[in-house]
Length: 448
Ligand code: SF4
Image (cartoon, rainbow, N blue to C red; front, side, top):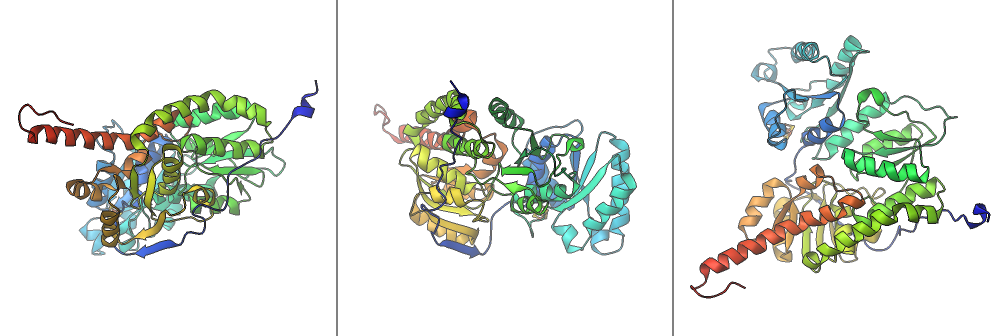
């Protein structure tokens, strides 16, 4: 039997048109309720294990990242804030001198730091502190032991997940040049939890796909190279600037839906397998067990979620892939799907799979959107922390979008956990309603 005769390469079979491809987008430019890009430090510092993030900002910035980090107590945290004080703001002190002193002290005290990010904030922008030049100056001073880079996480320029995009885009110029003769390599772009990355790596090894590198890498000393033989795939939908910077260095993007849910994960992996010419039956056999297990686990969540109406406020830019997963695999009805920014090209496959009739909005005018939300009267609302409490008080069930970024949700083994994140608030609301009913009922009556 000649194997070559039976070889059928994987072909991608996701739509690129239809669904919501041509749905007009409601563009809003009003007041918004979204975290700034500093929030990304919380997951980025966990991923790049020898990097340090120094926010050049105010007490508010320090407070934000500390409270976003929750109750995590670090013996040696890998983020901090260099506070711009009143003297700096009044122009009485040279903020550059102060910054150089803070950095020198930090690097002396923490010889484990190999990469230092100076992260811009609203105050550093207001006083027009040129962090690009500061990073260059400090990079020369501390190279080669420490690389110093900068990006902006300010609320004026970035929302929430855009902080990661800015950070990774700042890393791209640091990546070594890949030789044109080098074998094609796959680059996974976007922070994934280590456990998810390891699961994907096992599939790639089993299918003979490699070498595989990640951006960001777990250590700054292991930055991947990049060049014309690099094919990259986004693991997150909010990395427009990073993708552009990689393309400018010759890398080519593999288009695919995002690896959320069973369907998204299968299509994401199949797009990679197709590029590497993997045999279809080998691909199917490699993923079969994990996919079947995930399908069964997701099906168990369907009973609670099917037919429920969901409304997304713009927050993480994960909204479109999430809506696709929830509507197609769990039978939820999407009312409005809001996103801070809709990247038409990177979301083309996702939009094509979104049910027709979904309202798409980009940007925010929070009061107008609250009105639309109340009118839609959804069963569950995905929104930021600032909106969740008032909406709960109005009787709505909410899900904090920040949790969806902090939790490992990509891949087969996490598909049911992702569905569970939406089930939980509905269950809690149902329990509260039952409890209230029991209290309100006359003695002897049974709660429904
Ligand atoms: Fe607030 Fe701006 Fe600091 Fe973010 S960067 S915490 S929006 S002051």
